Image (tube, rainbow, N blue to C red):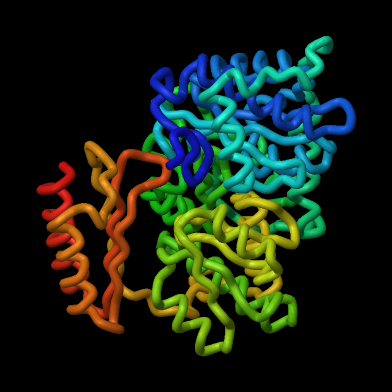
Length: 450
């Protein structure tokens, strides 16, 4: 069992184990030891962060650990996670590190690590690094040349490099005439995203672009789109775009203020790609949380749907095998493998706007391709993540639900990989069935794990 790494790096409450200065220092040492020993020359690491107050202490500790292992550090400051992944690859660094807890509140933080190719690390590499973090004796070995200490630099043009990269993904297509509301979640993209859309000619109404270290994701961003929807309608905007704290996911509002989530975005892009012969293997890759309505809509167009476990890393791993060039999650992680190595909210938004422009259609019209099954996702805090199969009541309730829904619905119960919570998903043709079974399963969780 992993003790530190979850489905998306190391994450937890800032200043509490494992998100402490001591652990961050050890992470820096372990990452530096691993990549320096596997490097043929000078090893350089990109280090970025979002806007959380705790990012300062973690950045300093991580950097110190890396420098002590003879690794040079290129600090880029507040920067979207996908920008760190891109810069790692484009600048020939041995790895990239992003300090962020994504969509979590400001009291949390985390550490994500990318390979030299800009992908999240394979499980086996994370396991080796985790072993080093937990046992410092594995970091210092006779084979390590400790005669060199690394240097730290500030990469001043990091923002400009990513801005040009993002715009080039749609060949700097003009967005003149487009009116949009942009919610940056008071997060990593607060100074970058507005520039990108304005430089392409869009009229941008900004929201949540004033981070103070404590307001990231607070009633804003991809997990809180109520204000975005209101602003779209109030300003008669063409579209609303909400990024999360580290800008690797995106959720949209159409011109009517209706939410357009990741399932709809993946589907509309896939239909366009298939129509133009650009969809690799005529397939998409999604997780088990994707709506059955998406599956049916794709099947009607003879587009294959490959399903992975929950987590964008598993989607990306499947896509890397050549399964598809479009994939992602309902939550807004959209992967355009032709352009990016991880979910990129800004690039995803640019390609949706490009599709609207080229088709001459509103977002609501593009989203009409699927009928959404009633679905509810419920997250409940738990005291301890007891393996579900070891429980007595919850497994029996899950079985009852599966038997009742049959082929007309489904139930998914899993623990969060980033928080001390359990996730319940129920989907059915009738909303009343969804409501009933969410209640039954929630009661079982409360009795056994509450």
